[in-house]
Structure formats: C-alpha cells, structure tokens
Length: 97
Image (cartoon, rainbow, N blue to C red; front, top):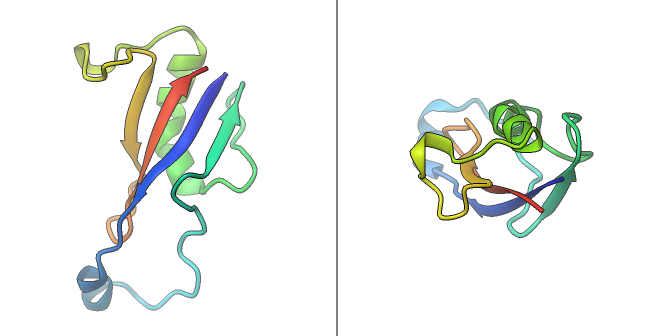
C-alpha cells in the first residue's frame, strides 16, 4: 500500500494575478491530508491533475520498485513530488507502508 501525504502547498499570487483567468475553486487539498491506495485507482477527494503526476511513481512503488533517479530519496521506497499547477503547486510525499 502507498500512503500519500500533502507536505506543502504554495501559492504564487503574482503569477495568478498576471496570467490566470479567475477561477472559483482551484484546489481543495490541505497540508497534512493523507490518502491511501493499494491499486491504481485515484483516491476519493484527490486532484485529477496531481494524480496524473503521481500515478507512474505510485505504480512503480506498488509493483516493488523504487530507488528513483539513483538514490535521490533517503527512503528508496518513497518519492517527493509536486503537482503540475504552476500557480499553486502542492508537494506530496508518497511512500510504501
């Protein structure tokens, strides 16, 4: 099983003001929130865009892999990843539990 923990959420107000069309609700994910998956189904309440980024790494971990990029993480059965939202990136720790 893989645990997904929301570690950090950043908002770039200057970029939003300059480039983004106004949107009512961009991201509901909160720092400290956790999600679990034991298959490749997106957890309830998770962001579609973030899932697209994390899914290949989760797949690798669920299939016994790890050690991404030759030892980048202290725990080889984990990865620190961010969603692809350039205005409000969210950092996630994914780890085998």
